[in-house]
Image (cartoon, rainbow, N blue to C red; front, side, top):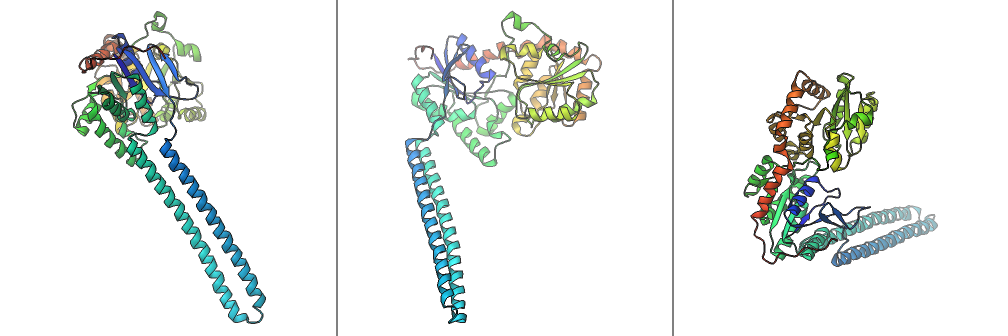
Length: 476
């Protein structure tokens, strides 16, 4: 059976690759349509997954016609506007010169008439300027209307249209859309091919905090419309599943956690002391770890400042990338903490747990800035669990269920520097750290991908697959 997965990722999410590898082990062929970026090959393999990266499509032929017409009309309006303005300016200078010649003879009458004419010409110039400005704006709005009409008639914007064409080209037996931006294309291709569609919602996409109100409403309408086209809906935790069921009046989605496994290679399964070796941290010092995307909205700034409130043997390590990294480096310099706050780039997924396990505690400080973050189920939670790393997390519903419910660490209000300092101090007080490690050793297998993949395979086993399922393709 050929499964075509859809994503807008450039750096493909771990969850997607784990799902793809699990399905490949079941004997299925996996083709992943992903986003293209500079330096990426059009076709590649990630493990056993065939990847085609879709280049950004230009405007369609009909859209090009409208855009060219817009440009032509705008240039014409600009030309005539300039012509009228030059004509009025010349007329103003001529009238001024004319009235100057005869002003001595009939000074009062002509002076009054000259003033009236000059005022009229000035007013006419302003009116023409406003008129042509309104004309350009109207032309732009008309063009936007026609572009939207074309896209509505074609149903899809160029990127999604390309995605549908590639799904049809591969003659998918199942379409697996990861996240909302791919759902509509998946639904259209499902209708064309008459095959099952799986919608894998990694988050409550319409609730992303950076979206405008209009964008949120539009995305909610889209998800409401197309989620009903899916033969199965999957999401990442019970809270998001319940929210989707309530919003869209659908069956409760299947829950597949963002779990992971240790790499199979023996050398990568060994617990090492990578951070101490890299940053020359003494063996008797403590390491607090944040790994992943360094966003300015994740409460990382007060975590840096909190290091001044902790004893000198505590070190903070940031591992990853993100737009907030430079700000964190600056704060570390301003606070005089450069010897205790360390930064490094992300490491390959195959090495990640080996690095993670060399810290003493991991922190998940996500802030409830939107419903997505409030119900968050981040990859790092499951990476910490598999690395048997005790966890400090902000007090959010799913994090509380796992971290406190399983005894893997503690939840604490994480807003001010004093909150972080208090949470770290609690973790290292008495035998808390030892008890958390014991729980992680005994319960981490319950949060492994080995367990979650069984749910995925069961979801696929219930799909109605056409009898003429496609033969396997050669590697691209």
